Length: 275
Image: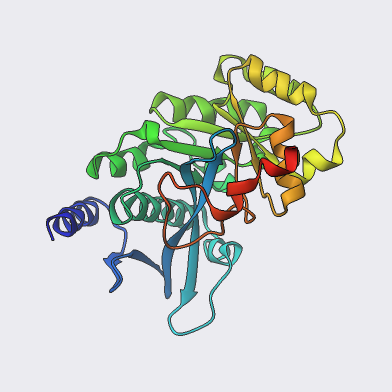
């Protein structure tokens, strides 16, 4: 009861400080409202490649108009045609993820959250400020949040440097998406290189030479995360490549619950394929 009351207090503080329409559902999960849609969070485990422990979760938004079919994520953001609405929706989603992960589910790992490309272009400065204020309200350090920079931003080096600098100055960790077949693009970031580099699992199977990427990632002190792992073959390829972190449906589907420190069932034998 005391834990639930504490979580309710955190929700009340966020409600009083922001204009987000939030409420706690009967199952304890916090939901938000955007037009006639009910928004909530699901979380997918991010697993350490060496010890197979869950080190955090990637957050995704789920929604559906009241009493109607569920909208896909792209459909949710399609509702925000204007930049001002997009900013409002994106901030609402991250607020939901933070409350549901750190408060409702008592997540003890790192929270991975994505950012819409249009948001990064429309918000000129102070990226992450509003979210940092929400985290402060619920007593969570920004260092426990990994901001996933969308691959589209890689095309604009000036914007990419600016965005990473803004988020890092507020204490967030940064995950960037790999572009191209080698790690040369990372050198453009200078001292603002990301903490994590994300690579699609299918990319590893399509490219015979992954050493240049891995060497660059290691040289900058970043971790390599292989995402969208759908099959055992992809998982084995990721481990052989030298990935530090693994994520994908083969390891665990996004769900309205989280496993803390316990490896997903599929991860239990993923070293068997290496023998």
